[in-house]
Length: 253
Image (tube, one colour):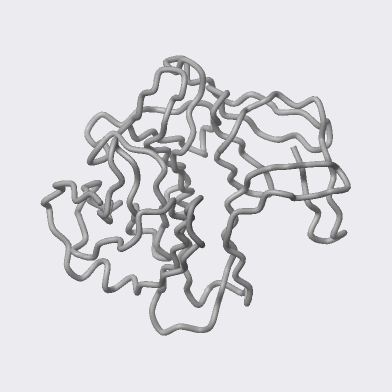
């Protein structure tokens, strides 16, 4: 694992950590790094930088190898995490489950019984709106690549589908921009040679923040394709939300 210190502008390689595979979920919460799942991991860990180790928080015993290409959000107002979707390469299974982690107790994930994703799916993009009322999922793969933009109302705990559709079938990354963000930089793309010094060759989809003080919330989408150039799109959050339907029928490329 590589840790980059933004104050010292220095990268440190931490060796000997538990191997979690590709695409783990990384969330920084109260200055703690949560490392959740990965293609070869069934576990939720916290990164202990002082001891240079991963401390186990929870094991998802039902998984065969691991889970990746999934999503997770930290909902600060409710002091909880949501984990959703994903792909288990060992069984070739995709998932539509949604799991909840209560940060106030902090020791157990619970599968939600009353709600699931509209389809068993993976490899999607997602954002949480500034007011934490909506989680928006862009596209994804369910055997076919979807055009749909799904909206989860976190107050109702109910899914809707936006009338807006994706126009590109690449692998999407997304970020939501609003006036609470204090960055003026956008980095978007697929980085392969992270550091020649450490002879690292890590595929990493990277999306950081572009910001001008918008009157409305903007979502930026990068679609990555191995055969084409990356494409950058923007859409206003209001356009996604203003015309939504309870019809969750799939619309695929």
